[in-house]
Length: 72
Image 1 (tube, rainbow, N blue to C red):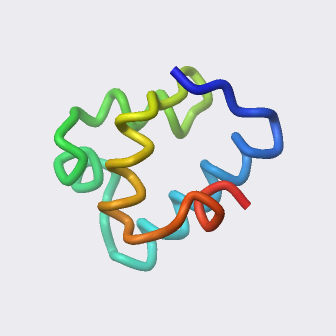
Image 2 (spheres, rainbow, N blue to C red):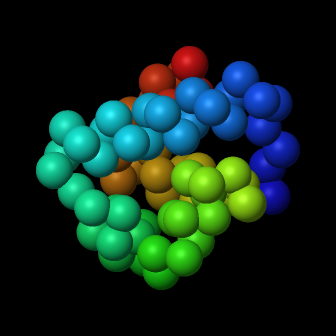
């Protein structure tokens, strides 16, 4: 599990929501694209848990973005 600093966590959540809006995807669709269930995505976006490195790579691939775009 990664440990984001507060600024990264806030940006991570904000940017994922922006990418999902751009794609017209729900959190459920995003979870399916990642090969996980929506409860994981909800935990990440509500601050209850952070994704592991494997999921970070999946997120970057699915959203077609760089790590910098995701957390900055």
